[in-house]
Amino acid sequence: MRPLDAKPDLTMQTHAAIRAAIMSGDLAPSAPLTQEDLAGRLGVSRQPISHALILLKREGLVVDRGRKGQMVAPIDADRLLALYQVRGALDGLAARLAAGHAGDGCARQLDTLIADGRAAAAKRDIGALVAADVAFHQALQALSGNAEIAGTAEGFWPHMARSMRVVLEDADGWAAIWDEHAAIAGAVIAGDAAGAATLATRHAEHAGETTHRRLTSD
Image (cartoon, rainbow, N blue to C red):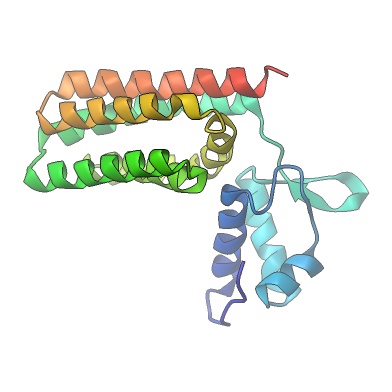
């Protein structure tokens, strides 16, 4: 995390910076959080840190640890499974709507995102893989033309990005994930609304089941 410039929206900048650090794993699950440390790292006073932590607690990314202050929320396998089930419904809707008005621009955008994901897999770059995965699904949501889908899903991504890092430690599944993405994109580009919806829903549900199994296997 880098020091921030003082601006009127400093609390939101602080919130975004800490949220990004949690998503990236820079602030790991169960890591203790102190206002003094965060303020020092971001170059701000404790006030915006305090306000940002309140927002992050509401999002389920920060939890109290009694008298010891706060910490990054542990990854909750059951909650993630529930989130993936909801995301499956949203992704299915997004893919169906996107297929209804796909054009040349849509094809180019999705093809580029697929290529980015495959390149990240070839380089075995987990950070880039997570970013590419999120970007692909957010693109489908945007292409749906329904802004409420992306708005509803926005709160899911920090939780899912953290869990993806656990699941993506197994490189054997990387190619299959992007094959599924390519199949979804192909159906959208072809205008196959029903097929795109089915593939997108199954993809999210399978990801949720895989994530839950990996997180509870120990």
